[in-house]
Length: 121
Image (cartoon, rainbow, N blue to C red; front, side, top):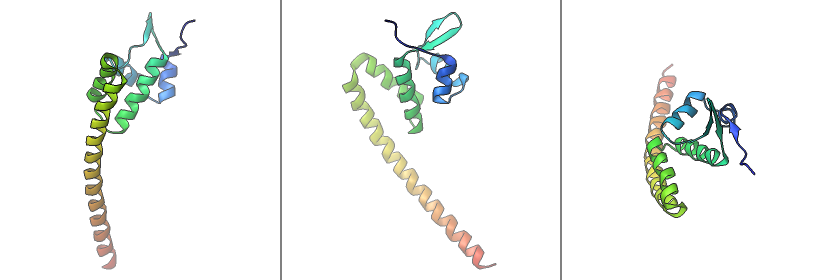
């Protein structure tokens, strides 16, 4: 039995991405749809990869980092991929914590200045 696929248009709708984004991910070899003429069809493997790509982007990872994870999975399996991912996630969490602290300082400073100016009115 053939694996179920979804069309290019369905893939864009399912993940709320533009056709340009989907074509770009294919161009940089993050996705490898089945091609039939000019049409593209995506298997469950590609859907899973797209979920990982979008989750990685939301967390602030670069497309190159994501590409390396996907490649590692194909070449070395889940265990190696997960180990590298945990290391990357730990580094990203540290980076985000620093950004969070800087943002909190900026918010506090802006509130203080706003309150000072408001008090002088």
